Length: 402
Image 1: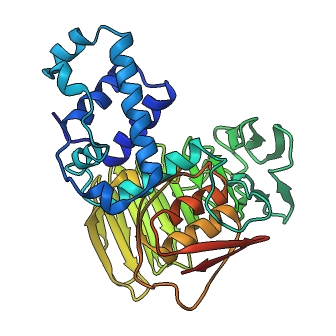
Image 2: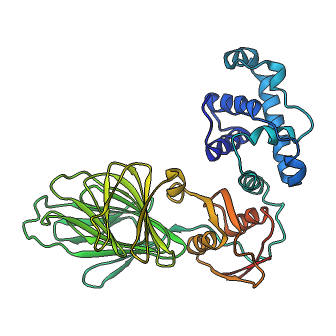
Image 3: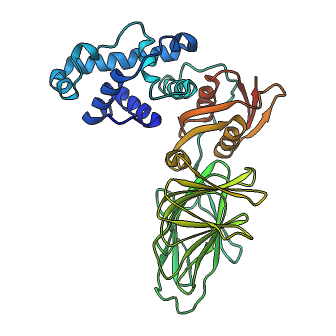
């Protein structure tokens, strides 16, 4: 049996508990649940009441399915004895089994606590908060070459403006779409457009060549309104975006971010180039890209690789978890980094200011996953479950405390 990705498995657990798992997913949960290795003192060490609650709910759900369905046939297919599917006592046995595939207990605490908080919103921690701050939404401003600004957050769906050779429209689900009206654009005119996504926002742009770009919070993209009369498709990014570039062997697609340039023919990749981060990280999911910086011949990335360009001009290549790199685009926070990096991401997504008290530990690493669709206090409550830090929310200011 293949080892499950820890995030994927815990999502399956959520689906199992809320009844949305299909037969294959349910069987996978039940099978993995019994096959995890043992670590007898994990739950005692953690001492988290919510983990016990989730464990009991999962145990009850599995027992119910066994009672309601013809489990003997399914169990025989899985080569698991029905008696062995009954969860063992005491309650910590399940977390002992989970440990083989989830080697870092902090991730287990974080993710399971996230589910518990999401499902039991009435039982909150002691975070001081006056009003819930919601997750980011479809917010952006389109700036045309003549300086005209169009608030995409408030505009109705439909055609927004007509430019040389292209019309610009907004869809009902919050996408900016460029559609060619003149395939050749004989006028040769191509205007520069910029879409600015503020803190607390995200947006998707469909360019006239068919490329799709997903913009994260606090990001902007500058691009030609049409590529028809151009030899290259060049765009400039500040912040973070996920690119699905339409293939065109004649016109290479280039992305300029800080002091680096990405060149592609057609591929899927993510660029994180926020100015308040120390590196520009480009992660390739499909195809091939070349990353170049001044005075360097550049590096060609393969799928699963990430280029890390530091402020001092060095470039490194690493093999990374691409699921984590684009978790934001799929609606998730997937943390495996230091506290301040996590809080910068939260600051951008929820449009809040972050301050720290002096005794907050500098080297705290957060590991885990939580939905970006949750409101702010839910996410902070989840982080608190890791222990060692607390939060106070005052308006749009979040204070991190020990």
